[in-house]
Amino acid sequence: MSDTPRRPRTLSDAKTEAENAFKKVTVKPVEELPKKAALPGVKEQVTLRIDQDVLEHFQDGGAGWQDRINVALRKAAGLA
Image 1: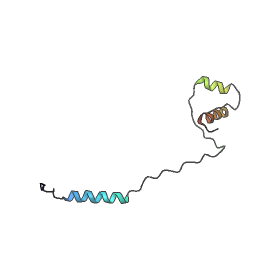
Image 2: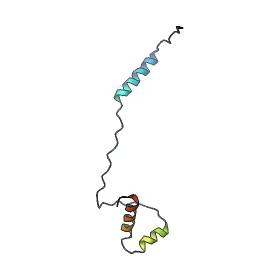
Image 3: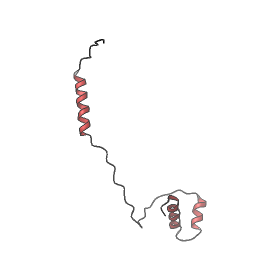
């Protein structure tokens, strides 16, 4: 077995090791924000771009077209 001399420790090595050890015990883990609970019947105003023919399809039924779009989106998302 050949004896190779070890590189002597320097001040920067010791400083780096100390900083790494300190970071491990002082860094807080990232906590996820709690998911907002969907309240039934509460609606949020958004801007949505949809094709003109799709909009006309829902508007042809008269008043309540936004509710009909909402129902269709719920079905498509598997929420209804």
